[in-house]
Amino acid sequence: MKSVTRSLRILEAVAQHQPVTVGQLTKLFGLPKSTVQRTLVTLNEAGWLRANRRDTTSWEVGARVLAVRPAALQGSSLFAAAREPMLRLRDALNETIHLSVPDAPHGTVVVDRVDCDHVVRTFHATGDISPLHATATGHSVLAHLSGADLDAVIARGLKSYSASTPVDAARLRTELARVRAEGYAVNRNQFRPGVCAIAAPVLDADGTPLASVAVSMPESRYHESRLPEWGRMVADTAAEITHRRSGV
Image 1 (spheres, rainbow, N blue to C red):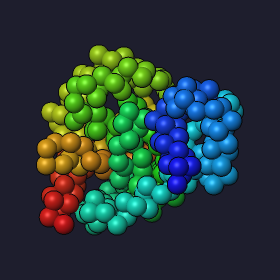
Image 2 (spheres, rainbow, N blue to C red):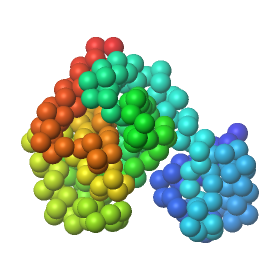
Image 3 (cartoon, rainbow, N blue to C red):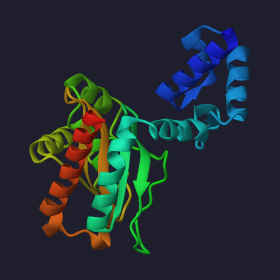
Image 4 (tube, helix red, strand yellow):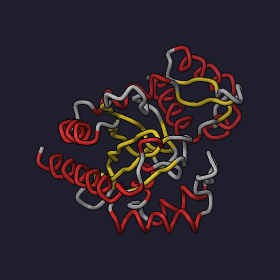
C-alpha cells in the first residue's frame, strides 16, 4: 500500500512540474534516487509516464493519464450537459466543435469533439493539451481566473508558437479584458499557423471556469466580418451548457 501511495504522489508531482528529472523528484520527496527511478520506470511501463521527447532524462505524463481524464468526464454532468448544444453548434456552423477543461497553469485538455463534414478541417484529439496563453479556449479560461492564478500563469513564461502569439504580459491582459467584456475569445494563428478558433467559457455558480467550448476552422474559412455573429453563437452555447449543467 505504501508503494502505491508513493507512486501516486510521484505521478502527481510529474504532472505538476513536468518535464521533471529524477534528481528534482528525489529532492522533492527526500527519497533514494534508486527508489524514485524504479517508480518512474514502473509508471512508464504502465503508460502513465513517458520520457520527454526533447530531453530524455526528464519525465512527463503519458498517454494513459490523458485518456483517463476524458473518459472519467464522459459520465459527468458537464459532459452530459455539453453534448447536445455542441452538436447543434456544429450543425449551424459546419465546423469542428470541441470541449476543453482547464488544467492550470499547464493548459486546457480536450475532452470531447464533434466534427464537421468538410474534407479540410481542423482536428483536436481527445486528450490534446493546448497552452492557455496562445489559444481561444485558454483565453476564455484565463479571463475568469483570479488575479493570483493569472499571475502564476504569466510567471511560468509566455512561450511563442507563432508571430501572432501574445508573449507580452500587458498585451495578454488587454486581450483578456476584451474577452470578459465581449464574452468570447478569438485565436487567429496564435498557436497553430492556419488555424482559427472562437471560444467561450462554461462557468460554475461562483464564476469559476469549468470548461471552454470552441469552434475551430482553417484560416481559409475564417471571415472577420462574421466574428460578432460567430462569437455570439459560441457564447450562447457556453451559456446553455452552464445552465443545463446546473440543472442536471
